[in-house]
Image (tube, rainbow, N blue to C red; front, side):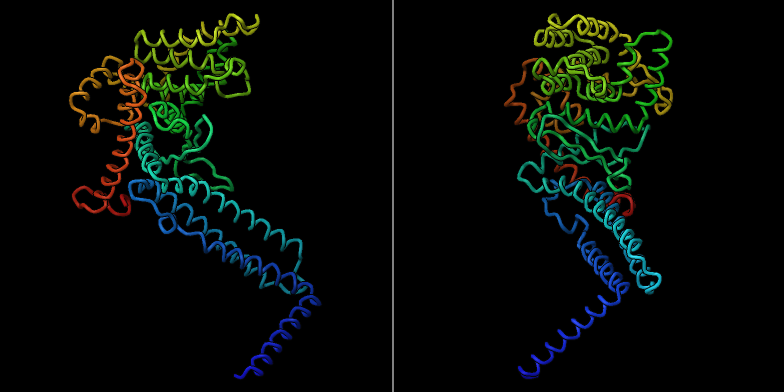
Length: 459
C-alpha cells in the first residue's frame, strides 16, 4: 500500500471511530455499558500482572521465606486473584446480556465499584507480604531475617498441642514489635496464611531482639491455645469471689501479660532485659495508667516480668533487676491515688502470677502452663553451664535450639560474662547459620526420598 493509500486508510479509521463514539453518545445505555466494560477489562489486565512471588522476587535462597511460608502465601494470593478474575468476568457477561431497556447506570456502576474495592484489597494483601519479602534482598539483613524466622518457629513450637503456622519476620522503624497473626482476617477478607512479625530495626542485632520477637510469638501461641479467653473467665470469677477490683486490671492486661510470660519462659532474663530497654521512657510515660490500653503501664509491666521470671526460674537476679528498675523510677513522688494503686497492684502480683503459671486450659489437656514450657533446661545455673561448655566447644552452640541459645547468651550478658560487641558478633554468625541450615535442610527434604514427605506436603 502506498503512502497515499495509508493516509486514506488512517482517515477512514478515524472517521469510523468518531462515528462509533457519536453512536455511543446518542445511545446512552450502550455508552454506559461500553465505558464500564473498558474499566472491567482494564482491571483484568492489571490482575494478570499479579504474579507469584517465586516469579517476581530475587533473593539468595538462604534469605528467602521458608518453603511452607512461600507456598502458603502464593497459594493464598493466587486463589484470591483467580476468584476476583471470575467475578470480573461474570460482571462482563452480565453487562453483555443487558439491552437498552434493562441497563441501569446506577446499578452497573455500583457493581463495578464493589469489584474495584475487592481488587484494591487484593493488592493490599499482596503488599503486606511483598514489603516483608523485599527486605530479604538487602545485604546481610535478608539472611538475618531468615535466621529470625527460624528463632520464631522454635519459640512457637509446642509439641502435641497445636500445628504451628509458618512465621515470617521483617524490620520496621520504631521501638515496638507487632504481629499480624496467622488465621486472622486480612484487609478485604480472607484468612492470613502465615504469621507476619514486625521487629524494630533499632534492636538489630543483640539478644534484646529475642524479647520483642518472642513476645509477638507469644500472641500467636496464646491464640492457638485460646489462653486469653480461658484466663479471662478465671480472672472474672476471681474478682467476683474476692471482691477485689485489682483483678480487673489483670483481666484488662491479660493478652499482653501472656505474651510476656511466653517470652520469659522461652529466653529467661533476656526477655526482661529487652523489655526494660523498650519501656525505659521519660517518667511521665512509665507511670501513665491508661486503662484503655491493653498493655500494662511500663512500671508495673517490668515488675510483672521479674515476678514471672522468679516464679519460673528462682534466682536472686530477679529481685536485683526489680530493685534496679525501681531506682530508675521511684514511686515515692507519685500522687496519693497513684501511689496507693501501685502498692495494691504490686501486692497482688504473687497471687496473680501463681494463678497464671498454674492455669490449665482445655487446650493443654490437663497440663498447666509451667508444665508445658521447658523450664528445667533454662534455669540460670543450667544456662551458665551451657555457656561454660560452649567456651570450650563452640560448635555445640550451633547444634542447640535457637531460643535456648538466646537464653544462654542473655544470661551471660546479664552476668557480665559477655560484652555487647561479643554478643552482636556471635548472634550475627548464629542467625546466618540458622538461615543457611534451615534452607539446606528443606531442600534436602525435597530431593532425598528417604527423608522427604510426599511432594504435595513437603515441597
